[in-house]
Length: 308
Image 1 (cartoon, rainbow, N blue to C red):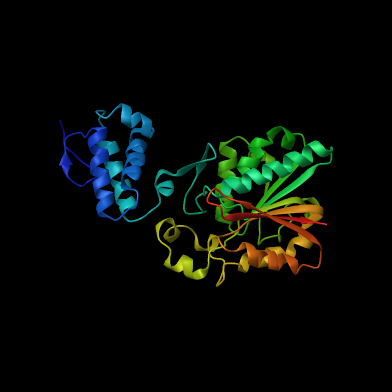
Image 2: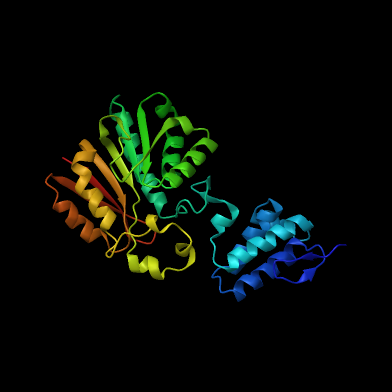
């Protein structure tokens, strides 16, 4: 049997799945990766083209030389800290396979709450009357949120009951968003626009019934000293300025002109930002109703702002 280079760097016979996972986990542990066993299973499974459950059921399955060489490269990248989602090229999120690379942020579990809130708002408006609902996602990044929304309301969007737009300052991120939408067969159902916050005319009339935004909300210091995926993801999509509220502050000031009458905005925020965001909203020259939604950790994660 021809020897192949294992993920641990030692020359082994054509390595079995079980041996590869053990060797890869040791390598990642030595590199200080916080979840070495899980990451090893994900990457070894990716080399086999299988999931983790399959690995447990087939510990003696052997990996060919070409795949073993690919795995070794992936392990080197992971040992240097590159996120699993960038190495595999996708992230499983909300039961969807989202293409991921350095053009945009990796979808986070906490953003699932933003999607759930948006779906509830849209559903309530669709059953209320026959008026078309205009939804605008600002700072869409790789398009995960817009994708989840359009897949949930595919028929309503195709019939014109829902008009969905997504915008971003980064043309590269929008390119990735376009690829994700196309991969799921809904590329023609979402209007994509490039520009800063509410600058692009993404919706007819420029006003939204529902505005959804997951803006950069980390402080510059947090981004500067951040570890893990923060060191690899685009800084512009993370850095909210000295207090983390720089981009949020600009969007909030534009809400009266960006939302339709009785419009609603859903804003994802960071831990401890609910109080200052409420203060920013209280300073708007229009009346607002403000509530917050808690994530699974009990953190005020989504701010709901209703005008009127």
